[in-house]
Image (cartoon, rainbow, N blue to C red; front, top):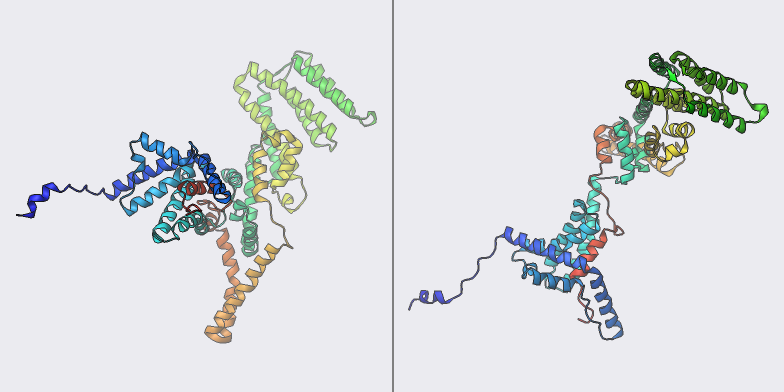
Length: 524
């Protein structure tokens, strides 16, 4: 009898799933189990503690937590009709299943970012499964899975340093991006804040580093000057004088088309200014000009309106007097009288000629910012003498002229620029530091010695001389490379971050390992 007669009596074997289907099903079931483990983590930890105490003390174990990962997995299996219990049929499916179990914790504990899901979920899961398969069937398997999962993110970070050599904080990157938006070029050391890199740029860069810093100073100064409507890259006396003249012309033009309508608020503001000056100044130190000027304004205002020409002449007079004194109380009184007039003119323009309001507000803003720039440019030092405004000087001037509260709350026109400049452009100490000496010695000595040695081995004494000369040039080449656009882009890139075992996102890896119960119970 032919054996084919019995073929119909043998149950047909199901076709094995395709690799892709198996991977998708395995990954899905792994994600479901990982989610159950994450939700049930507190219960799982409680069960683990219970098991440990039972093993150590010999006491009877407490009942299993109804909210542990194991019980939630069972519930998920019931609800899904066993879909979450799917087990891989292929090697690729086994990797997908394990990685899937790691991902939910990585997403939840890593801030929900794709990078965290990959670094603290997919990568540890794949590493754990790979180590498990390599040691499958041995007593080392559960330990290999744990060690591989914990080591994977750190190993990835070691490789990341090749891609991102100098990782830095998001806060510093935010400050650097402000200056980039303002058109200020920063070195990689400035962007990352790495002091060793900054010293290397300074020492190896030489003239190139000095030129780069000077260009950055000009770009920063240009950004600062633009806030007063001045288009220049150095705050020289000539530039500032021209800027003030241009601002004056803006006021003249607007004043020629508008009159100041007197109102009660103007009288109140002038009176407050005089009273504040008198109360804050000793009788012997009071300047009669404050009372005289306030009286002139009040007399003119009593006519019902002040002509634009009279207003502008008085405003210019007050501004010159304010800039011409170092007495802060007197300076403030002059400025307050001028502000009283400016505020009154703005109210008049708003009510009677709103089409000029935008130009008026811009002119006032330009003048207010000019006063800050004038103060910053008056600082001591070589840079100030050459017309360069440093971030530190700008910060100091902004605090002095626009107030501490405006600066700290980011409301002043210079607050953001000055803060970003101080955060990223502050120079490193010129001498005496170990990092600077190391960079200097490495550049000046090591490359020369190596060049001489290699040249000597190839061509004797002439070769050593030539090799030493070439080696001496190497630091300059290295410095220019550090400061080149490609060099800065590579050294400052933040494509990949840095990981360490203290990173709180490692909790996701530990969660997955604990839930999978990789280590055998102590009593086995």
